[in-house]
Image (tube, rainbow, N blue to C red):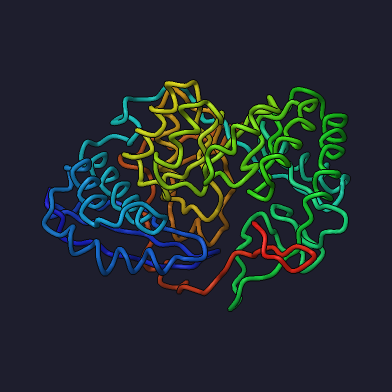
Length: 408
């Protein structure tokens, strides 16, 4: 199973994606996702200029060896660029191995642990009536768990709200705007903390106690503010409160945990198990939020989730549209196989993306399934991809009222 070619394909159907295609001597191909939103070309260069020459001639079956080689031989370890590049190689090699075996990938990971993968959708609104309409629309689509994001009076633009006061584009579909410089948005933590509990009170009053509700604070709060929010939301029985505070300071979650029993999900910006070591060992979180694409691939994520399982911590793998269908499919195979699955984030890709990436995974009655095609179940239409060249795009950033740059 000698690797004879490895091609890096950058395309921008509905947004920018970085895809690695590995080909073996007997013609089997595998795909990996190396997309890093707003920094895509850094991963493309890392792959094309530094990783691809190291792959040629290697045995595609030796996945663990390839992972350790790429991680340790670079000396400069970790970080989103390195780990996204390693993830692209890792997923592509798993895709090849499963195709060679004639099986869907989840079978090689131990087989299915469930019949379907519970997914949550992203409802939002500029006010409560618009939010209710969005929740109803998601329920009609089949979602059985809903993330709730809302505008805040006095703040012009808030992460996760589909129709802002500006151009009305679906902000929670693709916040990275195709503009030469990042868009500046505003933020006020005190206004947000005052407003949000009333929103969840209204949602519970309208939709009842059974519907699982989630919320993303998106790293914007200090630990004591996060603790206050978690405590204020306890009456509304959240499935989780996500990224309540920047968690690079892992010890900060001790303070949050002391003050609230609201379940906590952390980690979409993490890249390795080392980012979680204290959080998992001290049981400071309830859900691991890393993406397969940004955390070294299936090989690394499986080990991370096995570590989390020892402490009854479950998965909640990152799954927005800046994860390509290749990365999404890889996550679904892992979701289906592991025992400590929690929930899967799911944002539907646009029609152009679906044209470039032909997918076998399905969404039915609130549950995802990766399908039973050999491999991960995604094929790349390279001719279609070539019609959509890379376009510079940036995520927004926040400033406070006094002009201070703040976490977005």
